[in-house]
Length: 391
Image (cartoon, rainbow, N blue to C red):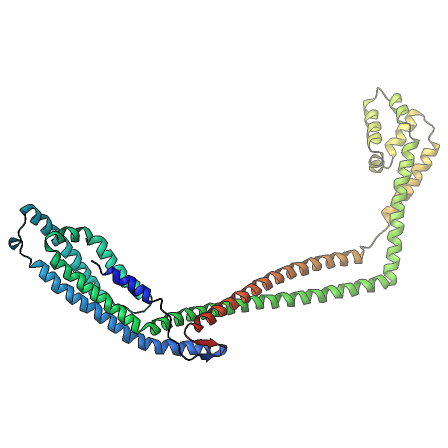
């Protein structure tokens, strides 16, 4: 079973340098049509070559069938050996013949349709056969080794012929392999281009939306300028300033009023009246809130009941009440500029978000472009191996 030595020789032969030939130049825009035409012409040559390979495989199957017949006709009565040895050899020979018959069936069903991994595919069949039949072969060879040797001769000659055919068609095999690789790489580039178009479409859509938002933002800025320059806004601004001034004054007045109240005296006066003490504690805890809740009426009631001089206190309360009334009667229009600035903030965030998405799409697009260039470089490198220069 020494035919595997021939496989190594075939693999070594595949590493030989390709014969020199004239450099063919192909323009980048013509590469697809060039590949299509070249695949067509190579397919015709490849079919002729593969027809020879398949014919040689069938020829080997015929040879092996004859050798199976010869093995089946072995007469152990003519062999001088112990009966037990004959029985062991006979049993293993029958098993080996079974494996050999399966190998022949596999070879007849085999139809090589491509030069890609041609040798590997054939080798795998014989390697599987060897793994299954080796032990039976070794035991059978004890008495009928001369007959089994014919199989090694046939397979050895077969691999010699395959080796020679591959050597004769080395250029064809190499070209077919490289053309197929380039064709696959071109398909990758086509897919890249489709994806790149999607990225560009998304980027353009983002740009359009950003432009619309920037136009809208500019319009709002112009509206803000117009509002600021209007007399009505100046009047509203003045009213808002006065309104805020009144609110500040109210807070100050309430604070001053609290300073006038002697909560310690009130607590001592009503120490046994839980209801009145609760009112005092409420005012003491949050004077402004308690005062605004009842306009100071409960506080005045406490002061009257305690007979405390409340002249200054009443003046302060009246002033506070007047200020509160003024605040309540003041109608303040919403500040248009505040609302417009909120709109600008929202639009600004939308623009920032779209810019982030646009930049992400651009990065993806750039990455695809880089990968495309790498694939083109691979194509150029592969084509140089078959003396083709991509311009």
